Image (cartoon, rainbow, N blue to C red; front, top):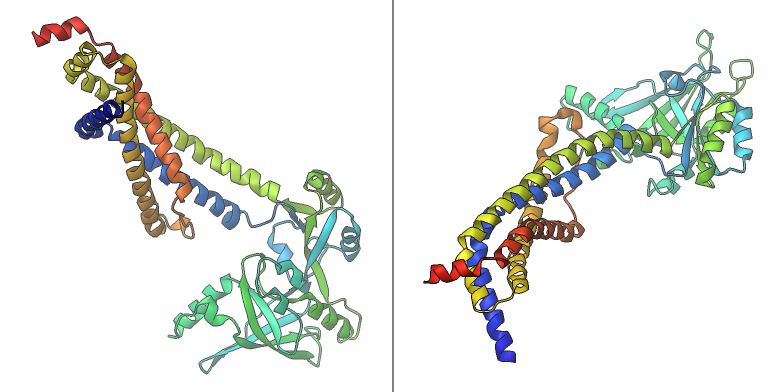
Length: 431
């Protein structure tokens, strides 16, 4: 019994090795299909992150941004307070009392002229720098050093990541070395705040030592960011420096965390009735999905064409293989080999070829992904910042299964033809 099984297994493996090399050439199209699939899935995932985070912003699904009437316009960052570019304190209090939110963070703007003095290698610069404030808790989970962002003797400041580009441009013009984000952390400076009116006879200004706490892309602002309690206390203390009362700061954004995401549509309507604008993750998802629908449609069309052409090519190749091996298949039927066994052996050959091309296609696709990631920004500058992440090992199994499925599907009908070879023709050929 065991000897019979051993002989049959040996015969099957020998026959498989003899025919696989020829079949590999006929099924070469699978390699392109799998490579395209791996490259496309990597591109899609990276493109979704790029569109969602780089172009539309980064928000958790339960977070919303509340804007004043000026919406997304430049008026929001104007140093002149108006009803259009600020949120009234009464509205802020009303929103904070809403039970729909678990937490509300406020971005406030100092309504005094502020400058930052920076000295580097014996040279100094003192540009205007609008000052904003926000609660340190806003950066929880976004900045590992967020607890250190609090008012103290040397005031920590956070700057937008655009600052590092401006800083390096300034350094390059003056023949100074370029700096990385890590090198700029802790960089010292002096903050100057002028509280007197523009036409005042006597200038009133205050100086504070500062250092760069970190750079961020979590907020859209054109200036410097400090803990909000510093601005509130400073404005309160110097509210009458000009001779008449001035609040000294305004609310320009609110960042709220919704308790129940299902209530988001109703909450948005409430806020819109207050004359405010709202941006949420749902808005970002819609924009992202619209952009990806186009990418998916085109990719699906290309993938379908490649799949159909691959199946047709392999199907025709297997028909030719069956014709060339017709004598062998007929001879097997004459000596008693069952139809099922012939079909099974033929599909095993196809499956082995599928495994081989699945493996090769996965690694070729991964290599192309890495190559594109390194060169895409050179070829298409507008996609600078798009990083293609090579497919993970989880996709390897899927790639192999798809490759095996395509190969076996293409071989099924030719396998049935092979199992039904005319026995009399075989006998004639033998004669």
